[in-house]
Image 1 (cartoon, rainbow, N blue to C red):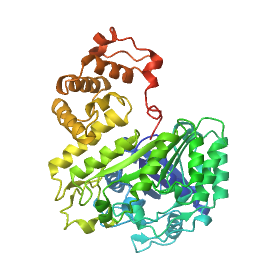
Image 2 (image 1 turned 90 degrees about the horizontal axis):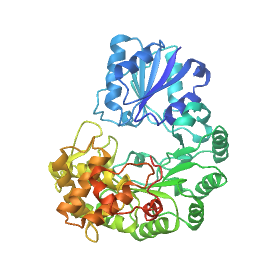
Image 3 (image 1 turned 135 degrees about the vertical axis):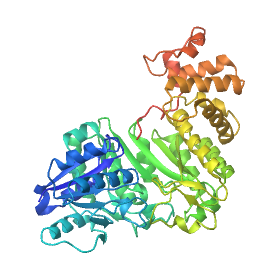
Image 4 (image 1 turned 30 degrees about the horizontal axis):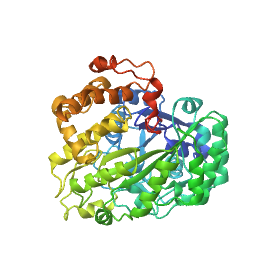
Length: 502
């Protein structure tokens, strides 16, 4: 029996931890199984060709929000060419109904964690054809699972992110998130996991991204993992998703020890409006969150990534704007602005009638309007998020972009900049760094009426912090008048802005 495990990652540098778990637990069928990974940027027919050249009898496909439409197209092609091949789907996108992408051509769908279920189905297919297409799988015992980390290749370790985990599940009930469907947090055997991490380290792994939804929920486990990295003398990068109100002293003391560029913490804030948080069953401990953000900002070298969501039930643009203003005041870190999505299986749908929530049925299933935000509002905020990424989060204009708002509302002033910038570009993509910088310069000088030389100095310090970069043509007249000291040009920058982030 020739079995292929495959998926389409969102980019080449990503790897599929899920496929490796399944492969690790294929037992007697492992020698007949092969992992083949692709990305959503690959041509679907080329993917189909490469899969079919292996003459598989079974193809298992990991299905996610970013590749759902691609998977649907891939299944259609494979079934037209080789209808006898059994196609099994798994992953978050097919674990909950209703399906909003057509997966009718798939033979079987495993809902839930498929680490063991895929092997069991393949074994059954050796002798029979199960009648049930939709297989609801109970959660496996994590301490009995075979770990997947030896199946990262040398090429993965050298060129891609290594995804790891010490737990699964989430204790919280945020209604927009699939993790809220899990009953509790389950922990792997930490000694075994750490032993596997050490093997990865010896092989040269230095980029570790933890996929745990609440890394710091279990203090003992979190401390042991942090100690593992702190014991290493070489350069590395570790990414954790953490909850914002749970930083006991033992965790704080360890985070302080990480050097610049070694640690990234992703923190889901989503909203600072207590009433909105209650609407989505999110427990919001504002004072504790503010204290912890202040600690991370002022006492650590960690790169911080905060998340805010546009379109939550009951949240107006004014409320969102206050959230953004407050976060910028609390921290100079990266703030990711996302648009609310309605994922099958989540409880966010209970607000549809009361708040007039209308969503797209095309991935990523983002909100189109509600009773506080019309379609145009949502479109503008999508562009807002994109321009925010290009200017503020990118770090390319970390200081000069602040001239847009100076000592007044971040949200209101950046909103005005986005309206103006879009009127000049009619797009938020394929804008070169030079073009973007010129837009920002012209806005600050001609719309905000700021002093040209002061704007030029700020932008030159921002843009010339990388050695060897040519002075943009629109700044050349000022570069002759302003002597830029290379050390001075970088000294005023936020300690986190040049760090690598995912």
